[in-house]
Amino acid sequence: MGLSLVRLKRSLGLSTPGVPWRLLAIIFALLNLKNLPFVWHIRLFSALLQHILLRPPNHAPLTAPPRLFAPLITTSRSPLLECDYNLHKSNSTYFSDLDIARAHLVTSLCAPGMARVQKQMRATGEGEEEAGKFVVVMLGGVHCSFRREIKPYEGYDIWTRVLGWDRKWLYVMSHFVKKGVVEPKGYLLQQQQQEQQRQRQQRQQPWREGKRSDHGGDNGHNITAATTPTPPSSSSSPSPPQHPAIFASSIAKYVFKKGRRTIPPSRILEAANLLPPSPTPPALVPPSSAEQPPTPTPTSAAGILGVENAASLVDAALTANAAGDGVWDWAKVEEERVRGMGIAGLMAGLDEGLGAGFRGDGEEALGRYGW
Image (cartoon, rainbow, N blue to C red; front, top):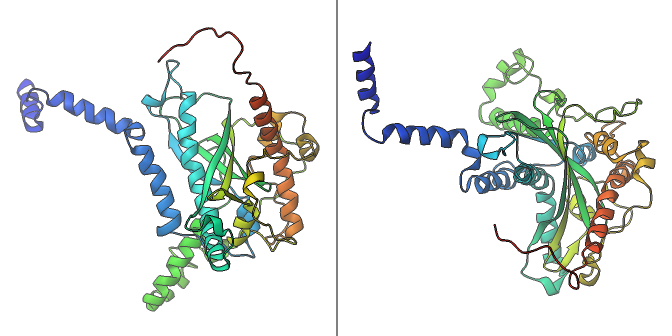
C-alpha cells in the first residue's frame, strides 16, 4: 500500500517540493473563481457583449409590454471569499452581483432603443450642442435591504425587472431568491433566440424540418407555441408580509444621457418597441432641469398596492401585476408604471432625506481614521 502511494505521488508530481501547495492554491482559486481579479469585469462585459453584439434581442411591438415588466434571472453562488466572519455572504458583495444582474436587464431591454435614439438625434440634428457624444445609461443610486443570510456556496437567483419610470429615472428592482424555490413559466428572450436559430437551420437544411415535425417541434419540444408571452395572472389574495424565498431586495435608478442632456426613459423604451406609441411624445430634458431631484408620485405606495408597510411592498413587486391578455395598450402600461412608481417614490423620498441630513462644517467630529 505504501509503495502504491509513493508511485501515485510521483506520477502526479506531488513529491516535487512546492507542488502540493501550488495544487492547493489552484483548487482554492477555482473554488473562489468569482472573486479573482478582473473576473467581475469579465462577467460585466460578457453580459454587454451577449445582449448587444452576439444575441441582440428583437422586441416585437405586439408582445413587448409584458416583456418590459418581465423579470430577468441571473444565477450565482456565494464562495468562501464573499463570506464575512459570521460565515455568510458579506453585505458589500451583494452590490457586485446586482451590477451583473442589472447589466443583463438594461442592455437586453434598452440597448436597441439607445441605438435608435442615437441615430434619430443624429439625423434630425437634435441636441446639436452634444454632437459627437453617444447615448449612454448611468447608475444614479442603489438601495439594498437584507432579510436572510446566504450561506457559503449556497445557490441563489437574482430576479431583476423594470419597476417604473418618470421623466428622468428608470427604476429597476432586484430580489435575491433561494435557488429552485420560485420558477418562471418560461424564458421569453431565449425562446425567441431558439426560434430564430430553428428558422435559420430550416433555411440552411430544409430536409430536417420533416424530422422536427414528427416530434411536434425542435428536439421534441413545441417552441413555437411558447413564443407568445402570457403575462402571469394576478392573485386576488393579498401578498404575504414576507416572502420566504427572498434573501434580500434592492431598488436602483438609471438615467439616460447624451452629454449633459437627459433623455426620458419612455423615449428609449418606445424606440426599443417596448412601449405602444405615446399620446404625447417625450422631449429632451434641458440640462438645467436634468439635475433637479425627481418628484415622487403623489399617490402613496400603500394606496396603490393595498398593503401597509414597505416590506410588503417589496414582496408584492417580485412579479409585475400583469393581468390581461398578451397585448397591452398605453393605459395598461401606464397603470403598471404607476403601480411600480408607488414603490420607487419611497426611494425618491429617501434620496431627498439623506441629502438634507448632512450638516457638514461647523460641528465636532469623533475622529479621523484610515483603513
